Length: 548
Ligand code: G6P
Ligand code: ZN
Image (tube, rainbow, N blue to C red):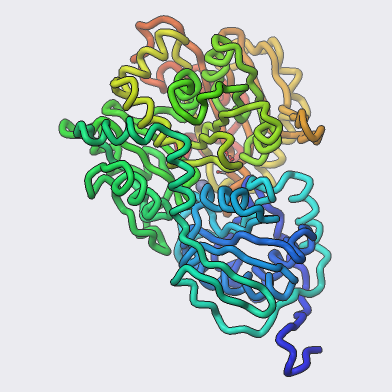
C-alpha cells in the first residue's frame, strides 16, 4: 500500500517466463518490452542481483533507438526507489556501448545499464534490449546472468517512485527522489580516451594529405562520436561521416556493418572514384567493418593484421601480452601470435568471456568474427577504436589496406573464411538437431564429409582460466585433415526463431590462391555441412539466408 504523501511505491507483478538474457543482454521485439511491467520486472531483477547498486553509482544510457527515452525514465525512477545514490546518464539518454563501458570505469560506477539491441533493426516493429555491465565496464558474467535470470522468475514486485520525467537535454545535475542524477556529455570522455590510444598527430597528417576516408554511422549512435573525432579532432573534411544523426528507427535501415547492410558504402568503396579507406559501425557502436578499395576486410583477418601491427600504435607501446578470439573466429590470428610469441586464448562467443582475461592482463587485444574488435582500454568491443587503429596503421606505414593485406597473407598465408546463417528456424527442432549431433559428435573422427576427412570433432567447452567457471555446449567443432575447420552453433542474439550459424575456414599458403573466390575455396566445406545436416529435409532450406 502506498501513502499519498510517500513518493515510493511497490507494484505487485507476476514474473515473465522469457527474461533469459542471450549472448548480449535481454533482447526482444519492442512490442514485448511494451507489455505492462515487462521492463520493470527485468530492471528490478538487476537491482536485486547487484546489491552494490544500493547506495552505489549507476551508469545509464542507450543507443537512442525506439523506446530508449521511455525506458530510461522508468529506470531512473526505479533506480531512485531502489536506493541508488547517484546516476550518470548521457545527454538525451545517449551513450554508445563503448562509451558506457568507459564511463563505468572512469567514474568508478558499480554497474551500468545499456539500452540497445545492438545491430538489430529498431523502430516500433524492431528490437529493443537491456544489457547489464559490471564495475569493470564489461558485460555481466555467466554466473551473474544466471542469477539475474533466476531472479526474474521469482520476484513478485518492483519498486518505483512517483516522479515526472526528467529533462535530459542539458548536461548538469538534477535530483530524482533522493538520488543525484548527473547528465554528462556522451562524447567528450570517450574522445579523450581515443586520443590516448592512437597517434592523433600522425592521423591528422594523414587527413591533411587528402587521404579519402568515409565512415558510415548508419543513422545509429556513433554519428556524434565520429563527427567529433574524425571531423573535429582529426581534421577530416565535413561529410566524412555519413548518416551521422542517430534516428530512433535508424532510418528504416538495418544498423549492422556488413557488406549487405552497408551496401552504399560497399558500392562507393569499390567504385572508380572511391576513397582509400571506409568503415562502418553498428546500432550501439561496438562493431566495426573496415573497407579498402577492394572491398571489406574480413573481421578475422582484421584481428590478425592489427595484432601484426600493434607495435605501431601508442595503445600497445608497452607490448602486447596475448590475444584472444572467440572460438568461431578464424585461426588467422593464431599464426601471427605464434610468430610473435604471444599466447592465444580461444573463448566462447560473447564479449563477456574476454573480461577476465583483460582484467588479469593475460591479453591486450581481442576479436570476434561478428565484427568485434577491442583492447584493454574498456571491457566492450569498440567500433571506432578499431577504425582508429586501422587509420593509425595506414598513417604511419603509408600503405593502403590492400597492400597491407597482401603483405600479411604473403607472410602468414590466407585463411579463407565465411559464415552461413540459416535464420528463423523452428526453435525446438533446431535445438534438437544440434543436441542430437552433439551427442554423437565424437563418432565423426575419421569420417569423410563433403570429400574431406574429419580429424577431430567435439563440442567446445571453455574453462575461464581466471575464475574457473566452465561454459559447456559452446558449439560443435570439426577439424579436417588439411587445415579446414567447420563450426556449428545456434545464435544467442536473435529475437525470432532460431538462427543456425555455420562457420567455415581453410588456410592456404600458396600466393596463387590468394585471389580465388572465397565460395570456391570453401565449397568442400559447404558440401561437408550439407552431408552432416539434412537442412532441406528438416527445415526446407536449400541455401543460407545470409552469407557473411
Ligand atoms: C553480440 C555479442 C558478440 C557476439 C555476437 C554474435 O554482438 O556482443 O560477442 O559475437 O553478438 O552472437 P550470436 O550468438 O548471435 O552469434
Ligand atoms: Zn553492437
